[in-house]
Length: 113
Image (cartoon, rainbow, N blue to C red; front, side, top):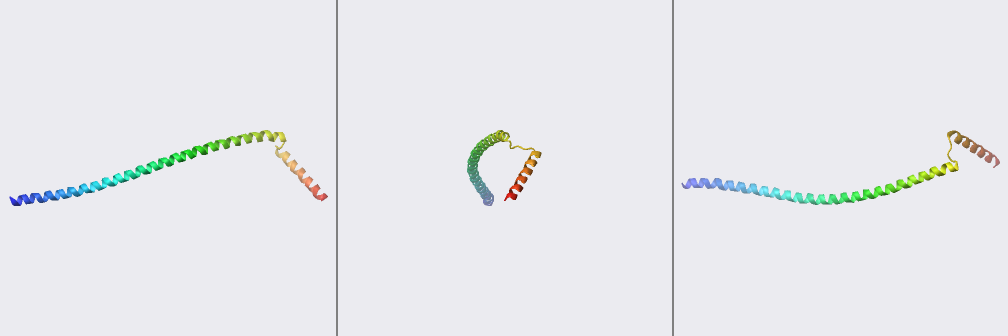
């Protein structure tokens, strides 16, 4: 019987060692997973903060753009009101005749000089 009890204890201690090494490996993987989770949570917090910053900047740029568009519309309206009053709008034929008259005047001025 001594030999049977010795045979039984040897496989059991081998199983215990195998189980122990498996548990150690599992514990190590669990620890690494926990570390990774903590790292990812920190990164997520940082990224959410950056998103808030960028959204704030975007809102500011949109407000500035709206102001500039209003200024441009106002200037275009003012230019449209002033332009016909001054008579600076020419059709193609009128423009060509004005250019021809200016050239004639320049030729006359050059002849006097």
